[in-house]
Image 1 (spheres, rainbow, N blue to C red):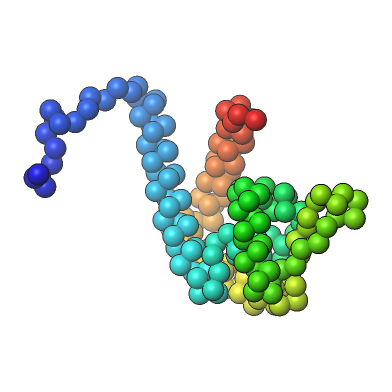
Image 2 (spheres, rainbow, N blue to C red):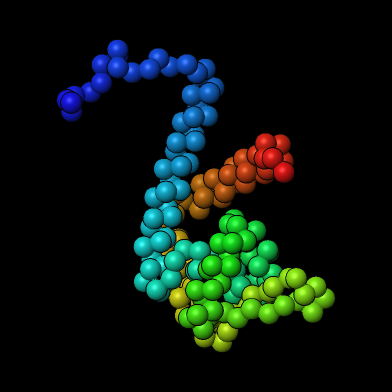
Length: 164
């Protein structure tokens, strides 16, 4: 097997339109950017002895207050089973507690313990500065524009293209 560039005979022919090529390029750019971004964030939150989902759960409970595990799963874009696993780990560390809803005993809520609140209060300013650092490659106006475009794309997909 050679390290040389593949010949035209070894490459599949392009079977897409120019607009499809643009959309495919956007998908690849989004996927690569997301992978790099999350890798950088994962490396940073490791400094706090946490995973990205654990940090996300703590941050959500810190800024939004107690949430049902279903609401937490929606905020973190993960499954209910994943939230349960994350909460198990955080509870074992004494960072969160869980309790049943008084109005519907099937619903379980999570909330920060004092230790969890202290941890997030201590590390969140550094985390926010790190996120700002990662975004330094775009000026603030570009960051706002990109955020708006990504929200528009995500809401459009959610409204018309996701199976419910």
